[in-house]
Length: 307
Image (cartoon, rainbow, N blue to C red; front, side):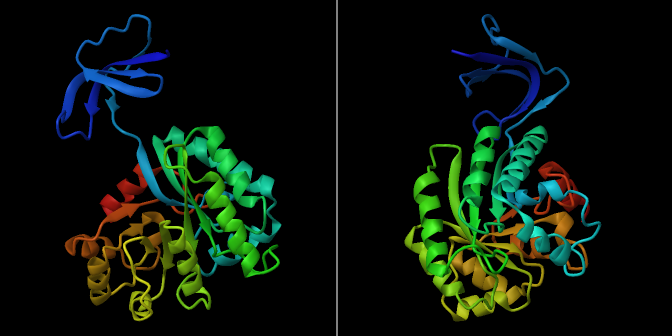
């Protein structure tokens, strides 16, 4: 058995029974925390001196497009004038091994920032082999990952037709989805207005899998509601332009929202976070665009604090 004892840390347990401890030790047996207490015996263990340090659970990044990691610095600004043509436009040049390299580097970068779980939104699945490459890379890094198999990919894809794309998505889900492992699979759907949006959601819900949708437009939630597509399994990404009436619909449907501070404060209002919380909507955060920012979730929370 491999044992590690972290000595003398200020421990933020996130456990109501234990609370925060000014000075304590943490014993880890074979990768599992087995004790948090004062003066744990470090005999036969690797001892890490954590004096004057804070020990806390790893961060969860709820939305990150890790395939962009290898494009770091390509865009000084984001969105329509630069992001869409200069970043998304490069997807046609990617090979599966490029997805692997980006996720591999991105996974290790996140671990270096204390992020131990990432929701990797991959809208660069041009054909067979791309999703497997990303998942394989993330598994090699050891980071826990919710791989988001997105249908919002560059057109045309290398799939023969929509049926082939759905068959591949089902294969990825059935092959890799295992909540007891490092890998969980969920899905990303096209934005509002896509002709096959309802079909995508129907396919995903048949698998009983969570999903997410980018909402960068006004009135999108109203349109989803009119089509009967809202649900607690659908995470809204961004959502700066969502109205209060739409937030009420989201609250009724128990829909969460993910805000990505560095990306979402460039020219659009950030008050969606406060307005959502005021209505009891769960809000989570992510880095979103590693082509533009470091995959540092704590840094994004710090940016949100100043907004």
